[in-house]
Figure 1 (tube, rainbow, N blue to C red):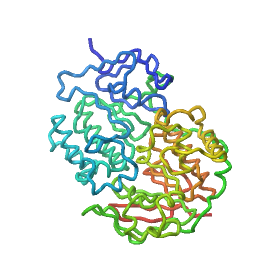
Figure 2: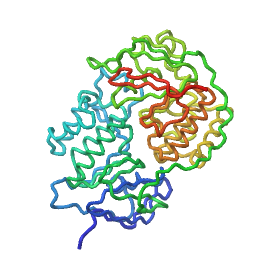
Figure 3: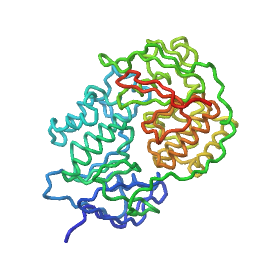
Figure 4: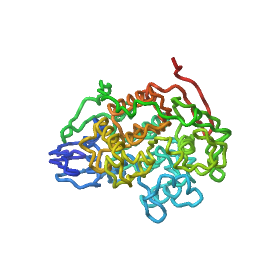
Length: 485
């Protein structure tokens, strides 16, 4: 009798005393490639990890590998982001270490990581080179893992997965951090491996998918439900009234928020930013764009005070030239920041409430008692974001989408002069993305300055007025896209 490729019966999983999967039954047949989508927090990642054998659950999971196939009899799970280790096997980096360790060589290079992976899996290196080229990753061979941005880390994991070509490949949020061109090329590569016999399960809500995808499902009330297609239309969202302390305009210390004059950043012989000239005035709303590796993350690290080479350049932040006596903490008092990299390094022992409250002090956890007024403001934001029932839970116990909402609340808790949102909606479903961008629009109507990094115009706030585009470390375009009225 013909057996299904994946056969799951009576799968049950509880996480932090909450039912995630309940009596789940699913069959995936040979030739099927799935997208599992739906709302954040329904258990998609938990199911993926369970199938891959990474977390235990009650029930039966049977993978019937094709004995005649030349592809490895493996289930490979590519997580939404990758926790790498240094040369001593330690993973507890701190956020600014990405910019201060270039000379220390604390992590493997991309080339060394791939060489080690190839040896472990018995792969030929010449087979990975076309994948590197297709994803625009060939130039990163000498880069340390700690130097990579979130999109570049995603590419590295995708390169390894596409090189291995396991019989079952599960990718959680495959397009996270990737620019438009890389997404298109990834879909071509996924179609190619599917043609060779790789069966795919993609965990995402994206609409531009590989042609090989022929099945869709969502998790509802702990059970997997097959659907004709993922819901793509936006829904009407009810916004609670914004807390009163965020209705007030920020108190600006200067009309000049950012000014860069012929800024250059290099790591050895590799020049990352070239002759950057850019000014951001108080109240302006900027979109920062560019392909993966164009220099966006490095540019932002100068703005938020994290990059040590800022002292060697003509850079002004909030009216003061860098190196004129201000500390990094003086700069961060003016800024609210979220980025995928910051999320990586956030304190895993902090609760939701503590995580939001830490935004007052620009720390990655709460290490002091809050006065009553500040505590009240945290409570207001907890309620505004719909996190009341989660406020005493560990941040890491929440689904990725809700974790991101917590950190978004953290960025605005002090009503900063400058809001830096580096791909803030990674991991959020459509409704959460729409909700957050509506919030950004409302905040910025009160005069807040914004730098927003996002690849897709359909997923941006409507308040954005100006755009700067980087290409290979240089300013390619500076333009006004929305005139003030």
